[in-house]
Length: 119
Image (cartoon, rainbow, N blue to C red; front, side):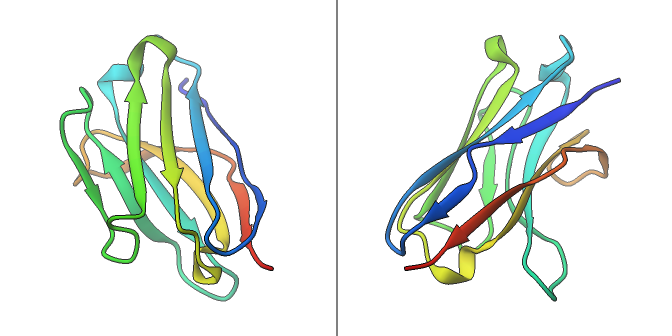
């Protein structure tokens, strides 16, 4: 059973940066595309970014393009989300998720990590 564990969340001032990590438990990690989602209070969960199995393909929500960068290290079974120029509206619980492709269904969710952007 694939398990995903997010880390790296916290409190940061507007304009600051954070790097989230999503560590996977399974040696077949590179079978999965990995997506980042977020859910703010009172709002629906939304897709933020996704990276394909090999890392050669990525996509981003319009709201984070140019500020967030997704990457993966299959040797470490880890996907990263580098978040720069953070805004108050980026405040949310961030989840990573395993999927068969970046357009496919989600088969596994992490537990989430809180990101709060506030002065």
